Image (cartoon, rainbow, N blue to C red; front, side):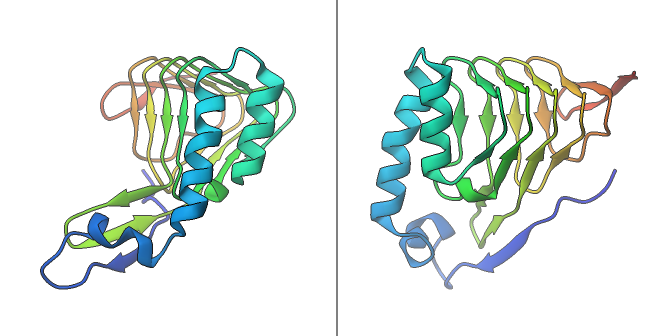
Length: 162
């Protein structure tokens, strides 16, 4: 499987990277993104969810559907792209960053067209999911998913190809 596409920023000696997040991200922008995320997570209107995501910086295609309680990254939403006619299931999470003890990593997340991401799945930073792929509920996607593949598990692995 291809490695994730990640940028790394080392943490200052003696502190974990989350304690210094304000050195790389504006607290005002992150607060705005958090407020928009509330709309994405809880609004019943799919149109309002798309508007809120685009205001955050997410590149969302036409007819993207975000189920209840879906979470997109509030620190680096501009690194997320979701293709036309894709569905992100209930309580799914799309991350474009990772704060670790000794470093912070971020990377683009690309979700293709006509993709179904099942409920309670997590998509990690630096991952690409190809067009017409399906991610089974409860999966952890930590590497690229080929177009047309059905993946599932923790970590996700290809179960079937269309």
